[in-house]
Amino acid sequence: MVWEKDPLVQKVCELYDQISSLESLKPSKDVNMLFTQLVLTCMPPSPIDVTKLCKRIQEIRFKLIRLCGEAEGLLESHFSTILGSYENPLHHLNIFPYYSNYLKLSLLEFDILKKHCSDYVPIKVAFVGSGPLPLTSIVLASFHLTTTSFHNYDIDPSANSKALQLVSSDPDLSERMFFHTTDIMDVTYALKDYDVVFLAALVGMDKDAKVRVIDHLAKYMAPGAVLMLRSAHGARAFLYPVVDPCDLTGFEVLSVFHPTDEVINSVVIARKVPTTKHTVENPTLPNKCSDIDMF
Image 1 (cartoon, rainbow, N blue to C red):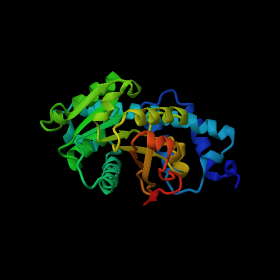
Image 2: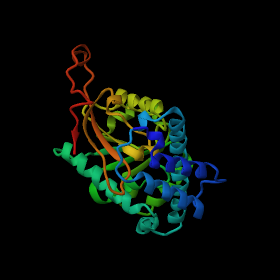
Image 3: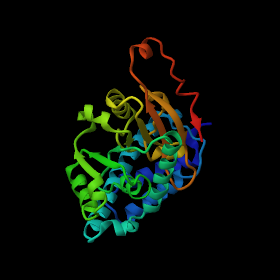
């Protein structure tokens, strides 16, 4: 099939033209309307394979992902500022328009984590790319991993400042949530302390950058530790970068899940393999591209 002539692809290109011509991506009536149309266009299950698009459409896709990332950051910053004005910000999280999506995504990720790590509860979790509104960490800490400490990493000091404001008034989360302003590529042996590392979808906006981050985590995470990644499938790959399980060198991919509802991101879970002389010289790891538990 010639994907370039597909009505969905043509619609996405039309929306890209309109979005890229906006003066600002800060929340507004026009911005909200266009991105809502884009999400609704890409949400239904689609057989489209973005790797087979022509070069022109590929370039549009990469630019669109960056625009989505910028708009998402501005939206989160906007609502984090509003929430921070409340005496108890965590009591008002439902004002964020996509809060229910985060509840579903966090529950999905917790269920997948529990399926593969049923014998223990993580003591320390890292979330890379937490942003000004770290809803995944907040939801997991509040409802699912209620004794776990969460270390949130973001390169933007203003994002961490806003995020800290949200939890500082909560007697429980203020003791279990920590914020680190640093590039994750500069974090080395501290990564060995975490039982689970979450990698946000927009950390590594293109394939090369994403692989560099994954390789860095593979080098420094503890053997047996779990990596949770967010990816995209079908037309949703116009919104977020795709993580190919074959790119997870140093990890055993345990499962990949592609939602078909309003939860946009796919979820990939992998386990860091021991880096011993035996495994290097005599690799016996599962074929990460064929023996993956899809559920």
